[in-house]
Amino acid sequence: MKGEVARRQRVLRVRHVQHAMAMAETARARDEAEGIARNAERLRNVRDDLFTGQGVATGANFAAMQELAGRLEQAGRQLDGALYDARRKVEVKEGLSLAANRDREIAVKLKDRARADLEEWRENKLAALPRYRRMQRTGDV
Figure (spheres, rainbow, N blue to C red):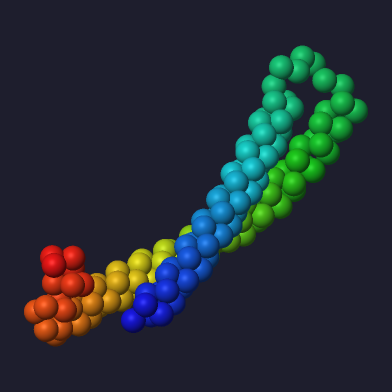
């Protein structure tokens, strides 16, 4: 009986570590997605600011700004794709985290049940002893 409680406790420790690792991976994936989103927003702001605040532009300057705007737009599309992938990765990591949490909760319940079974077994064993032995065991002598 004691061995079963010890085994369940070890399983619980493993499940706790797995859950902590899954939560860390989820947080890392969220941070990565937020970083990509910030970069995409900054890129959009740079592109929007490119044509504002300009006075009269020469043809060469205007062509250079259009070239830069095109490149910024292409980079923005690439960041949108990376952001989509990062968000999908976050969803996957959150699913793994939920599964790890569920496994941890199951391990807690199994450990508690094993501990309760052990206590019940001890009480039944004590109750099965003759009265004078019980008194010696509990210290009522």
